[in-house]
Length: 237
Ligand SMILES: [Zn+2]
Image (cartoon, rainbow, N blue to C red; front, top):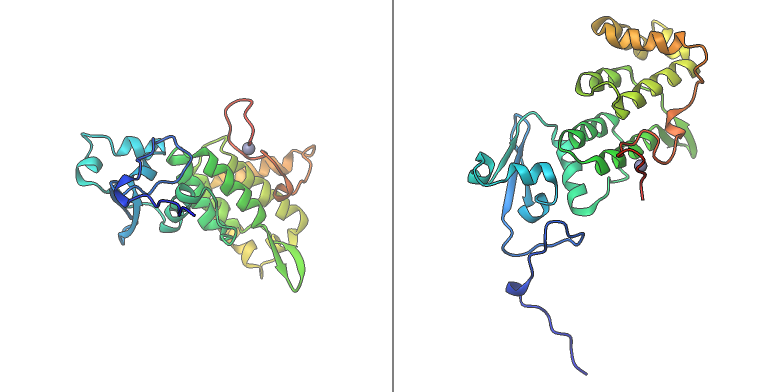
């Protein structure tokens, strides 16, 4: 019986950047990505980074990142960058990620770094995270008012994330109004503060409720490509 030959370490092929296969070629540089003001370091193979157009462009010869062999992202949330790197290597958003603040930051980063497939996968996870199982029962979590405030300044009109956040708050206020009205409710106090801080959000919500023909729909129950970004006519495979 002939035993299969193991390739020698130095014979691994460097795969082209558009390959779907993972490659950890020995001649791939490791690029540190330094994140947040406290400089948390993530180490990523250059061959992996080069598959994503923003990072590939960032590492082009002549740019500081290419010369220094590192990327600085001082304003990013480390959890958001962790989501991006997990996606780069494994093409998944971990199912145990259910902190919607972190997921929103991941979405905003995916949008900024031109990763629409990841943005769509995060959106699916955001919809799922509106539910928790408590004592064997699946319950729906109401929208935290501060979440919209986090998303609003980091998204533009037409952003699916902004649209989802507005729909989520509109739905939550419609089905559980007392939680947003009672002076004893933290959600009510936060909502009041947020509305006073940012009149644009308040005005947008006012129009939601003024539009009496608008159906009150649970946005977390929308499936498929709802709230996804795609080229015109595109769908998820
Ligand atoms: Zn889709």
